[in-house]
Image (cartoon, rainbow, N blue to C red; front, side, top):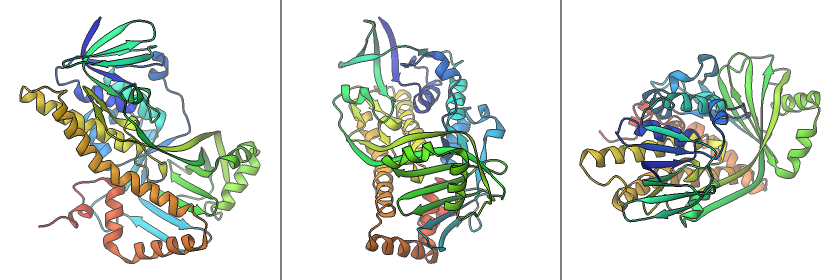
Length: 402
């Protein structure tokens, strides 16, 4: 039986980042993945673009991930506009009254996945094991045993689930999760356009559907359409010409003519929140802990933060000669990550509920929310900090004493 200090189930960005974070600890780490190695080495474009915060940027630089991303794959968000319905009123965010140069960074999901692998693949104490399906996890007092479908077993002092928001390992460990199926789908693609987006991210809460236009390099944007799932098939079946015209019109032709680049991808919108992030010698990170609705762009950022929080606690325990998988440590991780993630999860779901509710009273409330947000600077500063996660910014300092 193979023996490791830490076994991470799931070789997505959160799992690989966690292995990378722990690679300087002296621990022997295994990353267990159901897919073949080629799917991790050379992930294919999936239409998704990830909006990274300043905190995520710092973590990725520290782990050597950022340098692995081609510069031409990185674009910058300098402004953000929020529209509601057919109103021409706009809630605006920018960096003019802060010390930030940009609100965030846009990077393709497949580029992040590849960079996370490239940054960790040569680490001597990290072993990536592929084509393994986990059947069960047996937690003991000092070690846990991971049992695979092929009959093999692996022993580890700590097992970490990083296997998506529909985590099988979470269920194996008896951890329940709140699951919110929005009954909607996200249709994502890239489009070119005549006019300049001026590095502005636009979120348009139209009645019946939401349109996000997110700036990429040159005159290209990532398009995210959220709509009721039964309507997604109709949009997917449109000809390219029909689709181009439809999106341009829904955006008020602000960018002129628009043209589809590549494929349209469709994803069901389901948010999940584990009711605890730990069990005996077991922890959850990434989407396995919290799977967010994409509207506030906190999904990957929270996942990166979760592994960073757990890593710091483990390193501290090792420095003190303590058990790095103790119940005390895992409870502390659970508390810290819940304090950060729970308000964001509930707040995001609340925003989605308000801005997809087409009853007259809801329309009135959200128009009021936009106007109050524009006219009350502390609210805008607070929201800007939540979007950027920049702890050194004057945006945050304005909320701190002294």
